[in-house]
View 1 (tube, helix red, strand yellow):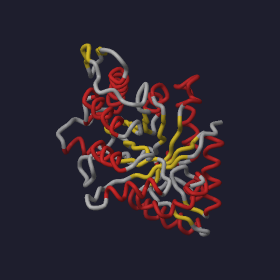
View 2 (cartoon, rainbow, N blue to C red):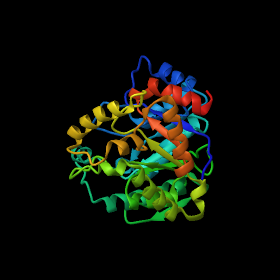
View 3 (cartoon, rainbow, N blue to C red):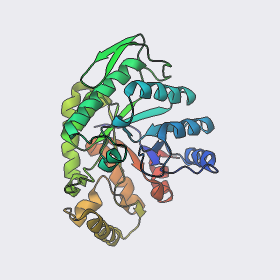
View 4 (cartoon, rainbow, N blue to C red):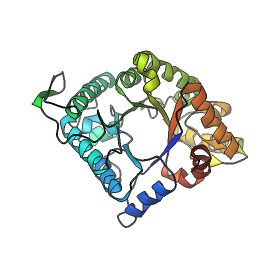
Length: 318
C-alpha cells in the first residue's frame, strides 16, 4: 500500500480583506501543505479562484486548491483559462478540485435544473476531457453531448505539465469510477447530505473500503499513481483523552441535525471523517488510514486549525 508522505490541507471558507494576506502566510508558516477553498454561490464565501490567486501572491510554497468546484457553474473552456492563470501566478502550485454538483438549493437559487446525478456526472466527465485537451499543446476539438470545442488552443498554458493535478471528490460508485479513470487525487466523501435520507453509514471505515475498491477497479494499473484524500465531516478535530464522551456529544447533535444516526459510537470514532482522540490515537489513526487504504492526504476545516497542529507537526516533522 502507498507510503506517500502525509500532507494536510486547511479549508478556508471566509476571506477577511484586512487579514487575508497574513492568514495565508501564517497557514504556510504553520506547515500546512495546501490552502483549500470550496465553491458555493449562496453563502458568504470568497470565489475560489480569485482568492487562490491572491494567496499565491503572498506565499511561495503553499499549494492552492479548490475543494471542490461545482462543474455546472462554469464552462470548462473558461475554467481552463482561469485555472491556468492561477497556476501561472502561483508558479505551479494549483490543485484543481472538481465535483459534479450536489447542493440542490444552489441550483434553485440560480435558476438551473438540478438534473439526475448520472447526467451531472456525465457532464463532469466531458468537462474533464475538455480541460485536459485545453491544457495540452496544440489546437483541441471535442464533440460531446454537453460540450463542443472547435480547434481551440487553450491559452495560457499552466506551469505544471501536463496539467495541474486534478482532484475529484465524491461518495458514490459512478463518480468515484470517473475519479479512478481521470483523477490525480481522489477525495472520498460521505453521501451527506442526501435530501431524502442522509446516509450516515457512508462515513464508516467499511464504506471507505468499498469506495477504495471502486476507485481501484476503475483506475486499473494507474491506481498506485493516485493520491487518496479524506476530510473532516460533522465533528471538529478534538484532541482529548476522553474520546467517547466527546463522540457521544457530537453524535447527539448530528442525530438531531441529520434526522437520524445509523452509526454506532465505535464506528463514529473510527470513521475516516472524524478525528476525536488523544494525540497518539489520532496519529495512529492516520498511519492506519495510510497503511490500510493508502490515504495520505487529509483536509480539516478552519474550526479545527489550532487543535490539529500537534498532529500535523508530529506526522510531517514541521
